[in-house]
Length: 611
Image (spheres, rainbow, N blue to C red):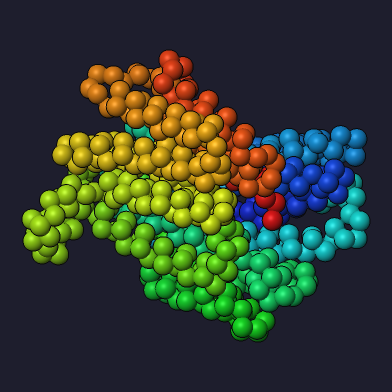
């Protein structure tokens, strides 16, 4: 009985920290975004404020991990809330005199918010025994759903001319209560244990996931599931009522309320089932959630769509809590700060990509078709993860798949089959994106063409990262993949941009620029494909992948009418020359580069096409 009372007290305190801190942060983001747009008419600054909470956990994943690993959960939570309180007070005080200060305020509050989200997951592992984690996860995280509902109510308050002083009073009060609740948590009985695997985040993560294959699968499944299903919610929560159903903004707030209630009901049910030692399986819940997602997106009428949306969120939460509880339970206590930091960074990066891709898809194929694509992609990705990760060690390849399915004949007829693994499959998919780029360019749909090139650039880093970190022992596959990757780079970032240039402009100068781009790429790839020609810790000359990404950004500006084809012709001629110079360019890790590409392309989309 005493243990139950202690556990209940911890749950109530963490619940209070969650509710007040998330409500205060969300209120600040919405009000800052509203205020800066109302006073500057700058859509880009308004969107930066709203996107900051999603981008910061990705960019700052390493320092967030360090702080969460160094500080005890109690210290981290109360100090972060006090700092947020001070930042909010200063920002709201300066706001009427210097409007642009809201961007800095949003960045600081967003950073502290990301740190707190990690700290709350670490606190669950710290304060609850393994047997209680399944019931503790929904009980402590339900506050964020109520906070979302409070944010929806705050939208109505903004219409009543809420002043910075009133917003300051509400925000400071909420952060104060959160800091007090965090301070009332019990102090740790011993200093926090730090991960001793390695000093670098990626090295520590690689060692941890290699040592615990089940944890690796849990992490990947969690990131993929939440990125797609939560990402679709962010895409559809305004589009469904406003555009598909043609309803007013009151119904946008109503859908937010439907989401909050569904999430809360799902959390309560999961908690009750956990008390009865019954836990729903994630895959069946995901299947049902996906079906209701598609039914809601179909948009037959408000009743059927909103009921289906309620059930989509309800079953999503059941699967979410099970995956989150499994991830927390299977993570060693000493590694919880690392896992929580990576979990949030991975989810937010996935959501950024999903929201961007979903917005593009909705514009061209509609919300219903987008939901079908998302659901299909999830089940394909989930099955691929289980097939790839379930094997022990770092030598997993598709040979195992063919052996398990009695398909040696296929490998004899097509010898390349035995050389296919996850990295090489991604490279082949990357090659397919080149044809998509040309197809959309011929249709003058340059936004989609630029998107294909951007995706190809990100996949180019990801397949190499997977090959080096997880599949390095497969020497034959790596040799094959090296040549395959060179062909993919040439096709995606040189030949395809050259064809798009010629589609835009058939002049002699455009032809010369296209020839320069392809010719220098061939020279570059041939030179650095030779043994012993590595540039060491950086790049010598502009990499072809960077060239393709520059072209994608330039194509976005052209599609918005900011300049003509002549600018792209001149730019790509210069890029082609830079590919074969001795210019030294720093080399960064694949995850950081992919996150940077996603953020830059997303910001370019907001700036050039704020639809």
